[in-house]
Amino acid sequence: MSYNLAFWAGGDDLDPDNVYTRLNDEQPVDGVDVVDQDRVLRAFAGDLKGWTWDGQFLRPPGTDPEGTPAYDVSIGEQLVEFIGYRFQREQANEIIGAMHSLGYRLYDPQIGERFD
Image (cartoon, rainbow, N blue to C red):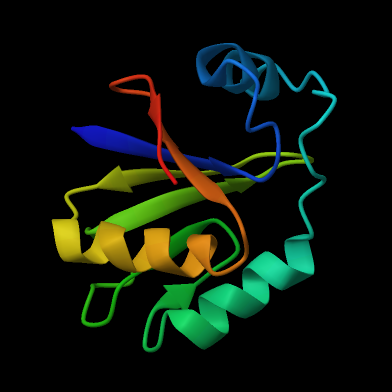
């Protein structure tokens, strides 16, 4: 079973369900900031100590390089999304913290809520 964590900056006054749908369809959304991919990757290295990144999957320390827990990461123009497989809450919280430090707010598409 997987769980999605979606992040974007800006667009705070917009309907988050609509924003998420449009960003997933790769439609630009006015008021949502462009993702700085280099900055996101630096956050992986700086804020997620011991995690590995192979260009697609982000894995917490101690994970088998071919196994789980793992996060399939998509870095788009305005959206960064993590699809987590067999992860623990603490690991998700580390990702949320790293993205929050960049000014990205979490949107949880499973419950349709965006968090501060």
